[in-house]
Each structure stands twice: as structure tokens, then as C-alpha cells.
Image (cartoon, rainbow, N blue to C red; front, side, top):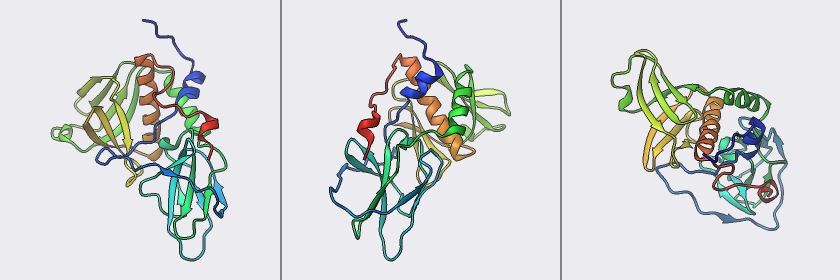
Length: 240
């Protein structure tokens, strides 16, 4: 087939993600970064699920951004002094800016998986059938007999009704299959099965949602025989 098997280490090194918008709205425009500004001090962990924070006093209007190729992309709904990085931030830095004073702060390093997620990712990829507990807001639940599982194999994505022991959806991995995070809810996501066709889903936890996103992307890369994603952020290009 021409597709070479990758080690887990190679897969982890190659997994980088596009910043994505919610499927019901276009992505916000990229904004040029300011060359001279005052700085806050940012503290916290630069990992998915970690918390980044700044100490502010007085009137502020804070907005968080992803730093991509010397430009910044606004992160929807991220407006306070704290921000929890998601899988959409993997491989890039984030920054926060006060739109009143112009003061800003950037993360000390790029966002990484973190030890716990990396260990789960590595262990999960060693299996051929990867199940995730989910809830789905769609017609799939009308005759649901029990909890649902989203199962990712090397070639397909399936949704199984565990109570009725039957599959309610089975679809080949394809170019359009993608997970869009919903920033209004830390466990909510939209699963795009085909372009323009979405399932509204809920994971048991923030980490499960982000891990599911990483696994789906990795499996799709393997299925399509791609060693690199369509848009790869090299570390030296993703620095703010």
C-alpha cells in the first residue's frame, strides 16, 4: 500500500493540530501582533488541561489568543485572567492581551500534552480498537437502550449502543472527519463525519474529549498514509 507503520514516538512527534472554529461560525480573522507593549507575568502549566493565569488589578478587558506564524488567532470565549489550554493549542504558544491598556503576556513555552495525557495516548495507540464513553444529542438517542461508545479503529469510526449491543453508526475514516471543540462547555464537541455533517457529543471529562480528538486525528493520518498534517506548526515558527 506504500503506507509505512510509525512508532508511537513518531506519531506523537507528528501530531500537531489546526486551530479550529466551531462548525456553526467561520474562524475569526488573524490579527497582526503589536511590536511594543507592556507585559503581564503569566504563570501555570503549559500543557493541555493545565491552567495558565495572570495577576491583574483594576479595569481590564482580557482576550486570549493562539500565536501562529508571528500572528495571533482569537480564542473564542477566553476572556478572563485564567485559561485552560485545549488540544487546539497543542504545539503553539498562547498569549493574553488587555485591549484597554495593550498590556499582554505570553506562555513561557509551547503547549504540550503533559505526562498523564501522553501516557494515556501512548498506551491507547497500542490497541487496534479504542472506545470512548460519550453522550450524543441527536436522533441516534431516540431508541437508545443504554450508554453509547465512540469506537475508533484503524479504518473506521463507530458508535455503539452498549445497552442494545448494536452499532448505530459505522463510517470509514476520511479526509473530512474531524473534531471541533465547543468552548462553551469543557466536555462538549462536534464530530464532523462528512463535510458539513456534525454530531453534537459530550465526553465524560475534558481530558477524554481532548484525548479523543488526538486519537482520531492520529488514526486518520495513519489511514490516509500521511506522516504530516495538512498544516504543521514547527516549533521555531510557533514561538510568539
